[in-house]
Image (cartoon, rainbow, N blue to C red; front, side, top):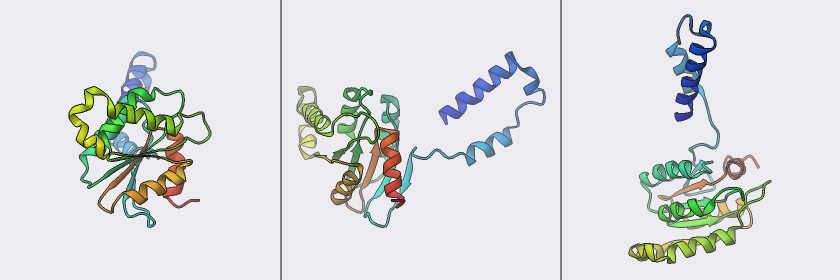
Length: 193
C-alpha cells in the first residue's frame, strides 16, 4: 500500500507540474480502487496451506531492514504455538542488521542458500545468530534464547522440509529474506515442482 500511495502521489505531481491535461477530468478514485484491489504481488505476504505440511506457510520476500521489520511485526502478531523462520539472504545485503530481528521473532530458524545469486552462507548466519543470542545485551532474554533452535539446510527444499518437521499444526512458518528465495519456495509450496 505504501508503494501504491507513493506512485499515486508521483503521478499527481507529474500531472500537475508537467502534463496538466492528464488530470483535466481529475482522478477517477473508483477506477484506482478497482486497480489496486485487483493487483497481486506474488511473494509478498502470501499465505499457503500445502497438503504436505501440517503448518501454514507465509512467504514474504522482504530483503531490507524496514521490510523485514514489517513482515516480522505482522508474523509475531498472528496466533501460533511455534514460529519458525526459513531465512536466506543475498551476499550484497547487510545481514548483521537483520539477524537480531529474526532471532527475536522466532522459536526456530532454518538458514538456507539463495538460488542463482551469491548469498550469505547458512552456517555463517547460524553462527552469527548464536553470537547474537550469547551477547551480553540479550542476557535478560537468556531463557527464551536458550529455547531457540537453529538449523542449516543445503537447499530451499531441504529447509522447507526441516521447517515442516519442527513446526506443529498450530504453528506458522515464515519464509523471508530474499525475493529469489521466496520465488523458489513459492514454486515448491504451491506444488509446481
